[in-house]
Image (cartoon, rainbow, N blue to C red):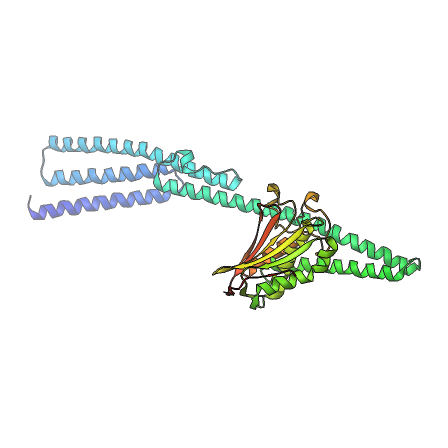
Length: 389
């Protein structure tokens, strides 16, 4: 075969393959909704047809006998039939894998748990990756739905509790105001004092609600300034000294290593005051609350140790939920520092996180619970000191 004939054979075979490929492409465009098995068989048939066409061109160009041409065609056709059969068998495997993915997508939309590739036995690498991603997305969506449901339930409970906490002082204010109005109050000054106290309680409750709202919206404005956490802890404890003494609870400040941090002293002081108020609430008469300040290279900590019964396991995940209040067993006496709506710990954690820190809670080995407020430290003093404020 000379070069001109060879070039003609190559060009003709290429043209046939191009025509067959174009026909297959058009067919697949028309069969866009057909199953994946039809697409795979179409691709295999196009490949076989291109090969058969090339053999026919080569046979004519080489002037083979009719018997040789028939033999070549028989070989090509039989091989092609086997190739298409193999494509059908292998395509069925791919189709089943696609069916598993389709079922997984439907399960994802219907809220049915999506099984992983290992659970379904899916053996095709790309499909396994897609199925595992669907399963991971399903897990994330389920976690998000659970969190939304938990938050919605917490909000509903919060509304109920806030409504109750508002009605009690408002009812008292109304009753005492009516008594004053009717002139039947035996001690008007005492009634007025009670009304002022109840108004203050309502004011604290409303202030806490605004704080929770700002924290949830990420709109808490911080005025950062270098602040000694030791001084901050001492000031907070001094503010609650009278209430603690009235409750028969000793409060001490232990400054192991002071730290100067860039914080908003007003907001962080509020967070720490809530933790101390929580400790007083859960410490029985004659008990002790200890506030310990310590600092490392990067983090500064204020730990509040109470003398209560500790945190029960089933309550550990609810401690910092807005509106949640502990059981009566963990409330030996009522220390009226906060508004009593179960917002104090949620506010404390929100303020700490707004500073780039956090509030955590664990049970102490010696009894009671330890709530630790942690923020980034700007500097530390190596001189430890102990104060009983």
